[in-house]
Structure formats: structure tokens, C-alpha cells
Image (cartoon, rainbow, N blue to C red; front, side, top):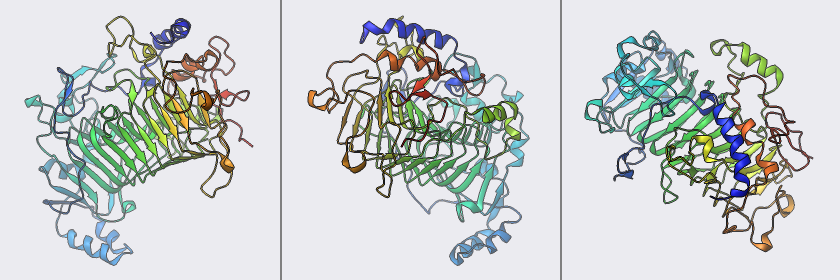
Length: 565
């Protein structure tokens, strides 16, 4: 086993952390899920892989409108847009989006005219629904019973305001048979079409085994879990959508493949604005999910992805969040562990210092139920080191290149390993992945040609420290990164390019972590802000505290660090 000289003490702490870990800290419980076209028996992907839905104007139209849609159309500033919507008015047959979904057939288009869609019929369906009381399975982590796919198929509005379920459960192939390749779009500006949850449904839109789903051109808000959720879906596209005010996630894809997030905006989410979790495994041979031209801000996390594999995120902005971008190998029950093979390039990642863990905010969140919270008050549902641009918490073969990363007061980029024990992998042979190597992260991560501490105007705007590393792993490397005036970036580890330790391709032999840095892992990473009391104190001595940041200036994970000078 790698790093056997340090593993004992650290893993003992990890085991204690796991035993004490509340379920909600590891994400929302979900049924066991599989990648599209993945055979769980042979553990092989079966061709074809599917494709990202393409733009189209063909297919039968199902038009949804409200009683005041005509008035709203008359106020549209664009004459062509007014004329288009006026031509649709006589075709409207539905007052609720779910009614149109229920009537839709594969390949059809659902056109949503200007209006506010609260989906009142769905809000009256109870959760749980006694009609589907026998449709539960053990959750992916073995912690309890959760609705099976059959539950959402037969009682779709119990947990979802709008549900698209594409697989006939009687055929047992987990593939879309009906309502596949649906296009659901607003017909005006995205602000003219508002889909508004009542805060009591887990998901505003759930696309479950709904291959080829294409959602675009509207605003969505007020989920108790996800505003938009794609699960076990082969081919999805989220485009020109504004997501806001979700208790946890704005956009979430899970165990899905061939997906595109394009020109989406996400803000005021308690966990993350954009979450490509359990991304498709390609082991760096392909990127199955693409995120581009998007803007995620004022969330707890701008982007996160447990087991966020095979994701290519480029030309986005992640800013004014608690942490800008996170990928990790923490949570059990997520297919694709440990995380690997994401690529982030040409992104702007800045000013991620959003203060969500102060005493006043903590008191408000603990004492104010979700339905009564003000939309602009974000209550964090996940733990993270405030003031960080990119955090890789146990990941392999990720690439961060040609990004501009600045004004993150703790650190621009941080990398540390996660013991397999934290996600339920151990050496007993009964683990999630039957992985006996506790140090299976973090290896072969590459950070190249990033501009650190310089804003878009070319002015100095430093991070607390540009690169933070716990010094563990093999093949991690930093090359071609520059700071203000072309100077070398700052770091908290020996940057010895001349010896080949940290220049590319990195150390060929596994390195052991610095225990003074790794000791913070368990108390910080396993604290649950939604159910527990105060964050772990910053002055712990065994393990050595919930602290991280520039050497000599470390602060608690949950404290906004001072602005660097």
C-alpha cells in the first residue's frame, strides 16, 4: 500500500470520522444508479454511447400557456418574438407543463409561452404517495429505503413538480422507450417563462432515463433538492436556462452521459449551482459531459461533482461563491469512484469568498425553515473551504490549464488526497469498489499555463496562495503557470522544478502527504452544516485542526480569510 508509514494514524482518524458521519453530509440519498449502456454484470460499457441532443425545429408541437400569456406577449419588445408567440396562441391546449409531458410522444416539442408555471396539480400530490408504497429499494449507501425508479414512473408528482420518465420498467433494460428526445423550451426570453416550485418538491424538473432530453430558454426556481435533475439519462442538453433559489442544487446530472450545459446561469444554491456528479467513466479517453459559456455565482459552491469523471468545463465563470469549483471522492454510493479525468480550461475563477458560515448566518439557517427563508439568503448544505478557487479533494488525472484564477483569499487551487475509507472502501474485500489501496488518490493531476492572481484587466489581484498541496501522490505536476508580472506563482510546498519533483510529468513514485496539512481532513470534510452545531474549531491539535491556507496564515475552513495584500 502506498504511504504505509503514515497511513495508520491518518486512517484511524478517518475511520472515526466515517463512523460519526451523518448521511446528509454525503449528499441526498438516491437509489443505486448505473451509467447508461453500462452492464453491471460484466462491468462493461455497451455501444452505442448516444449523443448530445442537437438543435431542431421539427417534431409535433404541444403548446402550453397561461390565461395571461397573451397580455405578456403584447409586452415583448422584439416584434419577431411577438409575432411568433401570437402565432402559437391558438395552438395552446395545456395550462400546465406536466399535462403536456403526459401527452407527449418521443421526438415531440413542448413549447411554453410567457407566464408563471407553478404546476398546481403536482403540488397537491402527497410525498410519500401511498399508491406506490411498495416501490422502494435500499439506497445506494445502504442507509435506508428510497423510492425506486418504478416509484417515480407510477407516482411522478410525489417528489417532482415535473417528471419525464422514459423507461418502461417492465422491460428491465434501463433504456428510454417512451418520451425520448423531448424538447421543452420557452418561446420568448428566458425571463418571460418562469417555472416556480413551491419549495416542497425535491425536484422542479426530473428527467429520469429520459434519453435525449433538451431543456432550454426559461427560468426555474425553488426546489427542495434540484431545480433540474438528469438521472441515468443518455443524452441531455440544458441551454439558456437561469436557475435560482434551490435549497441544494441548481443543475444536477448523475450517472448520465453525453450531456451539455450551455449558457446556463446558476445562483443562490445551498450546495452548488452546477453539479456534474458521477460523470461518465472514460478513463481520460473521452469527455462525456461538457459545460461551457456558463455563469455560476453566489452559491455555496459554483460547481461541484462527487465522482465528477469525464467532464470538460471551458469558457465559464465561477465567481462570488464560497468555493468556485470542487470535485471529490468523499461520498459512498456514487458510481465511478475514485474521481478522475475532468478537464477545466479557459475558465475565469475569481472572488470566491462568499461568507455563509458566520454566526448570524448560522443562526438564521438553523432557526428558519426552508419554506420561510428569503430567496437571497443562502443556507449551505455542504462543507467547503471558503475562499478557494478550485479544490480537488481526492481525484486523479484531472487537468486545469489556461484558466485565469484570482482574488480567492484562501487559495487559488488546492489538491489533497482522500483515504478510500472515507467513501466506504477498505481492505476487507467487502468495500464499495473492493479497493484495498487507501491512497488511491490523488495522482497524475496537471496544472499548466494558468494565470494566477491577475484579473481580466491585467491588474494584480492575488489569491491567498496560488497553489496548495498536501504533497501526496505520484504524477502531480505544475508547469507554465504565471503570477503577476510573469512572476512564479505562490505555493505552500517545495516547487522544485529543477529536480523534477513537481514539474511535469511529476514524481514517478508515490509521495507521502505532509501530516501537518492532511490532519485537517476528517473534522472539516465530514462536518454537516445542515444538521450539526458549530463548525469544527480551528485550534484542534489531534488531528491538527480545521485549518488551511498560506503557510503561517492558515484559517478555519469556514472562516473568510483576510484579503491578501
